[in-house]
Length: 346
Ligand code: P6P
Image 1 (tube, helix red, strand yellow):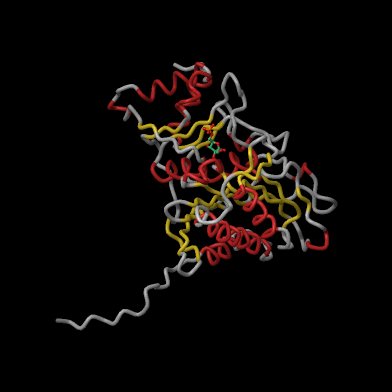
Image 2: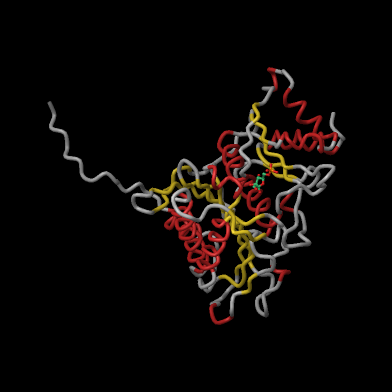
């Protein structure tokens, strides 16, 4: 029998690391001076640190509520607060970031001038999305969006953040689930990296992600159906009808964590909706640090994102924590939903 080669360790080099991928992406941005690479590398460091805490959340006393309430009027989970601090500390000394904005901070956080070298970027993030799922062990995530400042010099202001989604130069999310993945785009497609905890490195596991043009999954909180607009009700009813030719009825899947629901649909196809309704015409999700980054990713993967009438990435933001109705996923499914929303549903 042929002598089996002796096993040499268990961790073979798995090829493209996230850090190498970022450096190669930077080459697509002429004039970039490594500041972008340093910035995204720091975000991945923050992701690893948050991941370590999320993975042991059940073991240490960081569960439960701080008793405080954030700018959204939501009770702040300790891990939310922790993740916000980790992201801020990872980014505030990179030299390339002029200011930060977070779901957990009421106002923009301007980084002191002595820590800015070039400082052409501003970063928006939701440090721990889906926080209500933290202590029931359901997948949660971090979402980030990177913009260039509007002005070359002078103080960084709120106006530097109020840019439409088409101005993003990078967007991504981290999903802390059965494995920890970082998915991001700089406008040249979407790539997914899986963390190998044994070496503490993200490796390319999902190159060039493309969302199926049409799915068989719809994701919406049916508990809100009594508040839905007529057009939303008609669209969801349409998805539940029996019609083999169009692959209906779709399956309902709703995790209640945007990153988890989005990630499943990105890989399998489908549509996620957090629409406006009679009680909350603007819906629940935040334009700048939830909907815009997810929209950049889905469009780069061949999908679409709308508020029911407008392309999400063309909406001109007016407020930092502005909410918008959010319909995102496979392009043909989003087109169907828009048809119902714009014609009152038929
Ligand atoms: P609901 C989590 O709190 C979150 O911000 C998103 O991650 C998620 O998609 C949505 O809210 C869930 O909201 O009202 O269905 O519980």
